[in-house]
Length: 190
Image 1 (cartoon, rainbow, N blue to C red):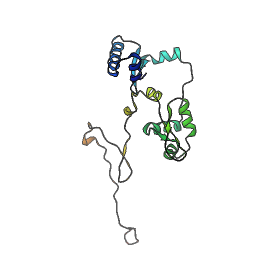
Image 2 (cartoon, helix red, strand yellow; image 1 turned 90 degrees about the vertical axis):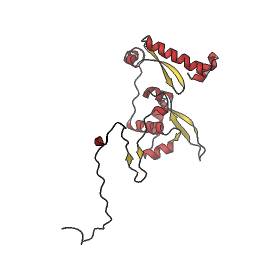
Image 3 (cartoon, helix red, strand yellow; image 1 turned 135 degrees about the vertical axis):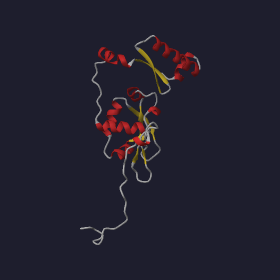
Image 4 (cartoon, rainbow, N blue to C red; image 1 turned 90 degrees about the horizontal axis):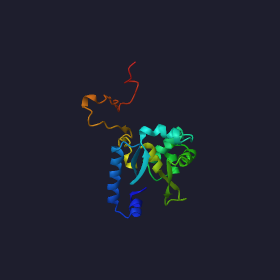
């Protein structure tokens, strides 16, 4: 439930709701409870602690577990890093049709429709759902790891090393030698 909704129902301010949520979270931790308070998109949810997940699933959940194909995982990653993206944009990135992958992700409630854009045909956009955040353990989409950056001059992926890495630990990668010399019969050794 969102902080705003709780504030309206309980007739409190959002700051008071945040303070009460923090107290509840501390109490559940101090009492070594099997329940935890998790934060998702400026809201709260009571959930079983991860340590008790296997027991809770055996007891309560007999549904078959969702399995995602490589195509669905690729599509999910594209949507996660490009919120409000159209089907055509996803297919342009992947280079293949993504209809079945998008349908599977919608079926598992990992993505949701995010409205239409003002373009010819008014295409639907997609974004990740709260279920995606819950499944991957993120409080918000901003908690996802950053993607490697592309170097502007050659389009290659540039991996940044941690600040803790010393210069001697950096990989020794030799740049290919460039030459403007043309190959002619005179300068080619036999």
